[in-house]
Image (cartoon, rainbow, N blue to C red; front, top):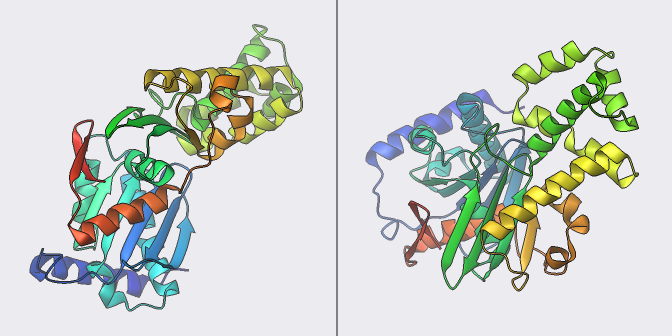
Length: 330
């Protein structure tokens, strides 16, 4: 369990260092880099040296700052301090690190600015997970990216120009995502109960989990989080792989949503395509041939992308590139 005294000490140290610590990275070499990847499924943190080499890592539960700000903030700080402890580093040095946080929901409202003000780090860069995931997967090369986990977003990069769609969050966004697939499954179960659709083993088993009570299912859905809905996605994929007709139909709709989004960011079948996220990898084998034949392994994950951006910040030698209405280090 996380030491609460250590956590409080880190927060206090960070506060006072923000008041008195110089903002010049070049005058004060940064000894360590921190990358954070957070979303509806979980929070991951790595600690590294600027010259390379991972020192430690830690993982925890969901950290979506748009849907649960307070919980996400606590999770991020606790997970970072846990990784710091694992690396055998003194708590007093943690606020001096360069921290890059790629977080689902950071592009919505003022949550990124609020989070940055609450973090104990002197040098922190808070962005949404599109930037870190794209940097990690393509490592600056041209190509397309579908990041499909609990949420979803889609990007392309060509000759330095980046296009990005999605990332608007659940329930109005996240097309093709695990949260959307889980929600669609529950809706399909109710349709089957009402006689609009025909039950399959998949839909029957879900309804049975609610004691064959559709009202209980509906009540659950009223307060379910994206993570709660996303937990049903593996069940759909497993059923589809086994030939369940409702599972196949739901998976097919998800694949179509993913392919349509990729088309919207300029996929032509001529570029490398990276599928990231648990659901993205799970459906990559059933994409249409034009998409499947373009698949390449991501060069790195969102944490690798976060570390690369942190390295650039610590060097203060990289230009800034515009992505949408935001600027970020390449």
